[in-house]
Length: 259
Image (spheres, rainbow, N blue to C red):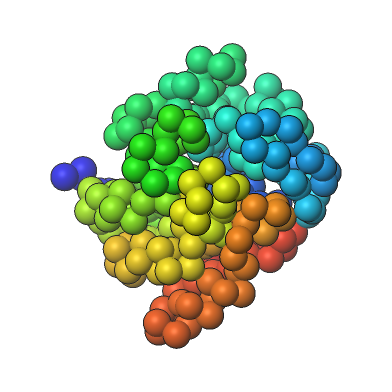
């Protein structure tokens, strides 16, 4: 079991949703950004064509200096687009998978359960699965992150993870997790038939149940054509299960205090 900090956390977090998976948040005096996507709407060619439907609610210049990027993976344009890739060159610390580090200069690659420190923040890479078992051959390797610092909430960022079993393992290692940023939207570009490659409303609910009393911040639920479920559906499923009070649904372009 991983030791937790002894100081009581504030359990508050200031966050700003740019759109899709891109969330800026302040933590222990640092500015963090998840999976940077700042392009305007367009189509992206590849093995599966991805269609971006909405541009960023906040331009990258409005965010000010970003200290750390938490990049779940670099293979897909809905997690790292052209403008997001350009931003990486101006960020002091970019954490991702070892595969991403091999492709992008300056990226620090972390193996699952490997921990690094940035300032006062301890950041641990945690496993994620971008689809069903064995999806890595097509989807590639992805990662999530757990952040801890004295006086701050323990924060889990899922990345593009579809596995509830992995969330249960992460929750057991780092309990209690105070805030969980879950990538939802039931992303389904068609590679695995009807099997989603991110959490859907029901698996997100199962993940939330595994995370105890953690507040849930859902992202990656709008802005792209391959997201097959809306955030409204997520809210409805959580509400029916009596878990709606745990959701903190960010509005694009509006700063949210998670508490």
